[in-house]
Length: 326
Ligand SMILES: [Zn+2]
Ligand SMILES: [Zn+2]
Image (cartoon, rainbow, N blue to C red; front, side):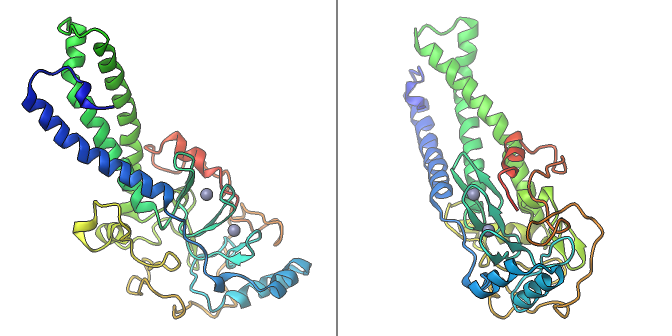
């Protein structure tokens, strides 16, 4: 798709179109490539149960003992998210305690830090390490589509009013205009939705199912205020906000919360834990089940897409949530 093909006799107009078009194309392609090829964040070693502990956990029939194994193991880990009954979140497949905002992706086959969703368009998980790139990709793609639509609009009108006499070229204009408008409309809702999530410090998954803290489920639990939320993803340096270079804050493992906003982002190893690590407030919502820990415990991140997200969310986003296993 290139505006050189646009039938245009005025050289100055062509030059201006090209000068704007190519930087847009580069930023769009660069963001897309970074989203595709950026490796997802992996769970640090210390979150994995030892072979001995995981074997014991699986062999153990008593639910209370299973719980105490998990609680004991997790008591020094920097986690604040819990299951709906107040236990550390455990991944049976990876045999690890999930860090906050981390989820197991059934397509990738492992736990992904601050997983947003598994995206078939990039064949990878959009997560802590690639979320900024993904949002930029949506933004640049939207501007690109709007630009193409705007620069072809004049020729599109000429086609319908009979002013165009360039043969087959007029069909290219028709195609270009319609495709740009179609993608542009889809991208407006998707980009708008992800901006909304960024400003509210939520992942797509969290917008469908609120993360559970020791004080209960709270969709805004990680929200630090609109500007701070934006900076958590885009970083402090304004010059780099619009470049697809990694500037997100933190390590993807620990996140400051609404109730503890002053904590550092780099807290692996010295994060204060809350409570006594033994007793946790419990909730009566009992939607979950878990093979290992009985039918009461799954924190149901699979298929629970009961329309909680903003209406702007696209069908593809809803679809994507179903990739989750737990
Ligand atoms: Zn996992
Ligand atoms: Zn994935």
